[in-house]
Length: 475
Image (tube, rainbow, N blue to C red; front, side, top):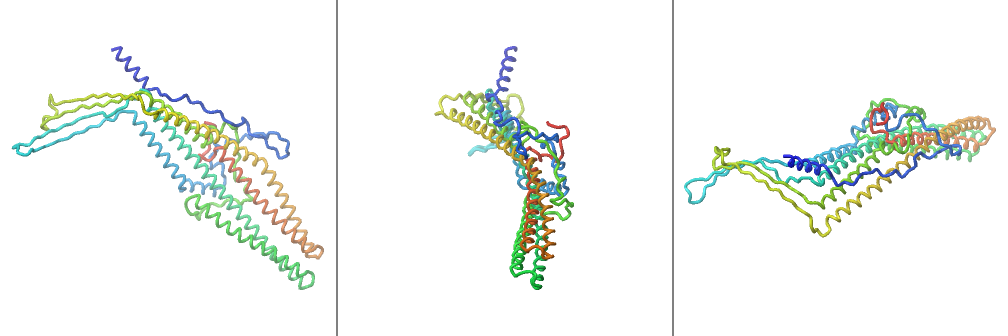
């Protein structure tokens, strides 16, 4: 009995082991800190904000605009790309269950009844049988099936991380598209005001020419400025319509008519919450595309174990037990039972290098996945570093734009007064109007860039995968 228990224990231990290589996470090929950025050119590291990490901030808490929150909610419910990503997760989860089921035996029950009348015979022959059997159960001594199960599990986890990455991209796409719409609506309003101002200037110049205070050249210059502004007006009208179409495509349904009222682009200072950047090592567990790449690498590591196990013997068991009788009533009587037990073993001896080539392919695929994993980390580091540089510099740039607009507005007011009084020429007024229009456009564009950069920072730090914030901090 002790020998049997010992043999059974050894068999269980063999079945529990695999030939997978020991997995070690590759070292991150990036610095331990984000590069320093200073608007004064001093090169000093900017102090890290104490705000919560982006990956812990839910999108409802990051995007404070109720209209944008509604659009993101609609996109998460209707976007087709996200729906496909979720279906892929369900598919790979089912494939993992298939791989897990292959480890255990398959037991089937079968029954049959036959009644036969032979040619020339005066009686009919009947037979009935019932059996329960186990067909071709591979005893996983060397862990081949377990390695395949682990590979399927890692594929499932990788796909789930890809779904989270798709959601993050979708949230950022909807938010950026919404801001683009606000920006073009602002530029459309600015251009409409410019058209109105140029029309008044043109009418004034025509009146002054009739009175002899302005020349035909002044009229033509005013006319040219008005025509240019009208052209820009048509361009921004088209851009607003296209922005709406792009937003509809992103959310996957028509824009509802009962959207809450949101702020304008120029009133968007409180539209986005502050977030912390953490350190580069946080990306390894917080950013879904890096998590996806690592699960893919782990799956390749398990596949190497399965390829190694192919060099060892494969043991399969086939067994069945049942009863056979010439009459249905005697099917379960004594003497009708029968059973079979058929173990088999196959040992690879010579396969023209098939198993060796399969192992080489598995190792090469793992090395490819290592390179992909490291490249994903490098790309993530670059994206975060660029977004942090933008957050540091866009604040100063937009502040300078506001000063530019205020100065240009004063310049335009003075030029209007002096032109009406005949002190300055029309060229001075025209320059003032163009300067003001350019300053207002620049402020709108840079404000959009500033907000879009903050959304990008939120995205590249792994934010947007959850609706609500994680109050407990890092997981």
